[in-house]
Length: 313
Image 1 (cartoon, rainbow, N blue to C red):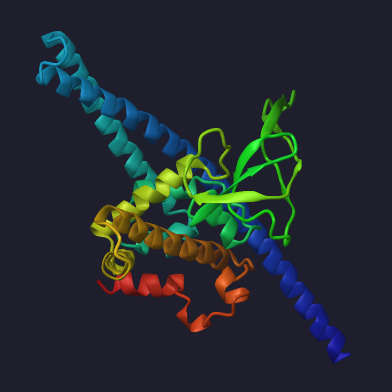
Image 2 (image 1 turned 180 degrees about the vertical axis):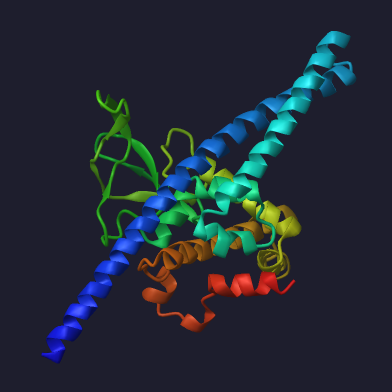
């Protein structure tokens, strides 16, 4: 009888936890939509403001037509855009404070401001996928494979398609279809099996479709640069690996800087992945090197350690 009661209590606890998680996920999705709206508006304003200032500088350098009225109008527009950016940044702080991932993790990381956090939380991350998929989505992989399908479509993949552990299919977009009710465009992909590929550096290659999101890749580069300038924990990671690539591996300074930034970016994404799942109460898989290669789990850096280190400053 006691066993049956304990089982019913356990089942009830699981149901309550599932309901709480579902409610939290709905709140996160609503917050993400708001973050995306603010981030898109901020980026649009920023582009217009930069273009206005560039035009003003061109006039001052006398490389463009000198007109007092034109310069005055551009100055007024640029000032107005700066004020609007400040308002969005202030509004972003209010929106972010409603997001538990920002409150418990991102807000406590040195070198990560409101705008970068806003852009990061505006992305629709697939919580069912492992960390490796998040790395691929952000373009943070060591190399790519130049592949072809049976129909001749050229695509890049983050893994070797001839490995045999998983079936690789061509994701080349062959057509689009619009839903009459939602007006959303659905991409129709090739879907042919790919059997072999050629290893290449992780960058764009002429004629090949990419698997990463260019905007997300740019965002993580900006995050890495911000860490290198004003970070604490991740700045230490960047400097450590930059020195290793410079002194031990003998790379040139520019190449070593890029490698150091990528190490800091990948570690931050791993911690962000951990924090996202743990704060929402979701299960997740350990990184490949710990789950399959059986590396020492004591070397795994947790997001709570990063928060503790940065808060101590």
